[in-house]
Image 1 (cartoon, rainbow, N blue to C red):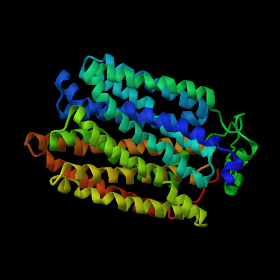
Image 2 (cartoon, rainbow, N blue to C red):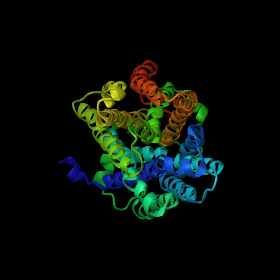
Image 3 (tube, helix red, strand yellow):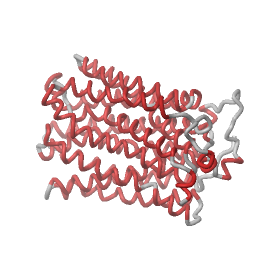
Image 4 (tube, one colour):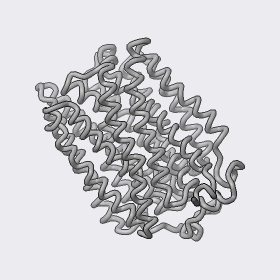
Length: 435
């Protein structure tokens, strides 16, 4: 096969990005699994927890804007290293916090530094993969989010029981330092990577339209944020992220609470249902990139293959509106249908990320990804403020928390199809941009 002749070092790079994303999500998921422990220790209510979550999201949104720009300037090797180094320190620092305010501070630090992961990851994929493989590579590395979310419930509750909640933050936060060693040894850009064969280098740079695009801007020529916001393509990506990113955040931060509130599941007992949700989502993340790849290989235009795939994934999320109804029969029905929706989200995510490198030169990929990620985080903050915080606090106060989750699942079900329609209206075709 052609891939065997060209070499496979680019998949080593994909594996490095996958492990970074796994660590990224492991670190951010820890707090949701320790919510009961921390509520007891610090006397939190749902409003306190939501405020801490909001602090993370605000810092993350600001970090994304700066991180994308910084990574475009520093390059993927240095930018990814610095981001992982600082978020690992922030993750460990959770163990030394002694107040609710302190948790808000360290969560903000974690959000600010973790923001570098996805701009760096998407830029790495754009540098190392031709277009037809990018959604597959993005799906593989993005599945690290699911693996991190699977590892967390299978380890964190048991660490907390055995050694205390502080050690859960120390142990999970320290994993990032091991990744830094591997990244330093094995990563460089294709033009500088001595382990890369010429045949594979030529394959990576085989897209004819990218050869003709103004991808290599002069060193003195910069593309400003305001300049990028002048493109409809930037707004299409950003609006798609604004509407759909909050749904994933909802799963990540509130799924353990949903299981405890609805079914009394907590502590180590929560490990299996949470792990199952993210195991199912892994399939969507990995397989979500294959559908557009198959369509492109059948000579579909890239934009059409990507857009039709995203429409299918948007529709596949919609059955989540029945999660609570089916869950009233048996908890596992709710777990499976949430897992199926999370799987569809990850398939959607693999493709919406790839639209950036479909439309923009590699020089601007980090910045555009950061802008879109910032909009996604702003959407998450607004969802927390306007829905989760007020909704959950109100309905829990009147002992009807299940009503709040009904409303949230309807929001989850409709977000993707609305995002797809708006993206289609703004950019009917993903026309590549030339600077």
